[in-house]
Length: 183
Image 1 (cartoon, rainbow, N blue to C red):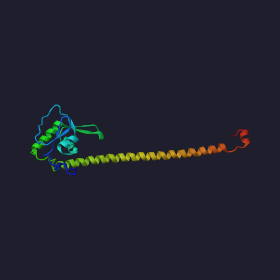
Image 2 (image 1 turned 90 degrees about the horizontal axis):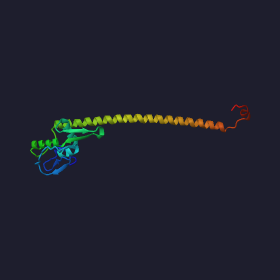
Image 3 (image 1 turned 90 degrees about the vertical axis):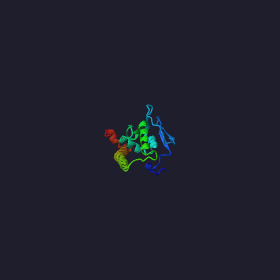
Image 4 (image 1 turned 120 degrees about the vertical axis):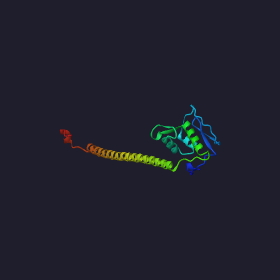
């Protein structure tokens, strides 16, 4: 089942109902009551995807197209998508009515191509971000190496000067230089 595409799986035998608390509960009936309630809230795309039998990315695509009510919180890697439970249940009811309760068809070929295109755009954007990050890190490494070589060179020069001064201090001086104040 892991290798099977989401759109080819039959959904008649098992349905996932999304409760107001955002959890999916398992049931074996195809007749489900759909009443929007004020107590309904928001759930994650992972739970919504399980309820619809699609991937979380497809749920995000449904949100972008307006098939589902959703919101995004956070930014970057901490960005989280949330789906309205009411709109999720309404979409499930429409899909069951359209398919006469037999199977869910994830999307048409145009929608599939669109979601693949979105996935490719997301991947290329992430790749560009990672390439820029790698370039910045490479520049920082180069600067660190130059700094290290400069510090090592200065330390070597200071050691040499230190050794020269110690040698001068340790060398015997003629008595007349000390007597006449040359040193």
